[in-house]
Image (cartoon, rainbow, N blue to C red; front, side):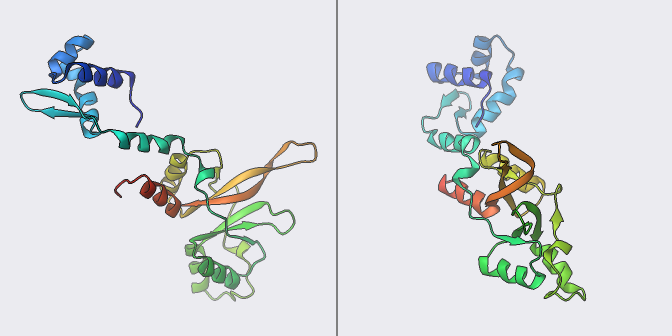
Length: 216
C-alpha cells in the first residue's frame, strides 16, 4: 500500500501518543480535523489504525500483511509468468481448438512461420465465432480469425504483476503475451519484432494473491 507523507506522519504521531484524538492529531500537524478525515479513514480501513469512540486512535501492531501487499508493487512478471502456448498463423482452426483444450488455456499466441515474430492472438471467443459459421475449420487458418498487431496488448518481463493485472482487467482479456524485442546482428533491438517469452493470465494473478494469503 502506497502511503502519503502525511499518512506516514499520522502513523508516527499515533504510535508515540496513543490513544490520541483526531483533534490532537490535527493540532500536531497544524491542520483542521476535516482536512485529516480522508487520511484517517484510509488508515483505519487499511487496519493500520483503530478508532475507539470517546477514546481516540490506536496503532495496530500486526501490519505484517501490508508488507505482503507491497510485494504486488514490486514483484515482476518474470517471477510469475507461465510457458506460452504458441501456434503459427497457418495453423488450422481445428488444430488451434485442439491445442487450446489440450493445453487448457483461454487463448493462443500466433507467430509467423519464418522468424516466430508475434503477429496475433486468438481466443476461445474467436474460435467459437468461426466454428458457428460454415467455414471448413480443417482448412481455414487462424490468421483469418485472430486479433492482429498492433491491437495486441502485451507485457514485458520486467513490468510489475500489478501492471499486468490492470491490463487484464482494463482490456477484458484472458491472458497477456510476455514479450521482448528480437535483436539484430549488431546487437540492437528490432522495434517491430517481438518474441513471445511467456504468458500471464488471470490464473497467474490469482496464484500470486493466494500465495500472499489474501482473501479473494
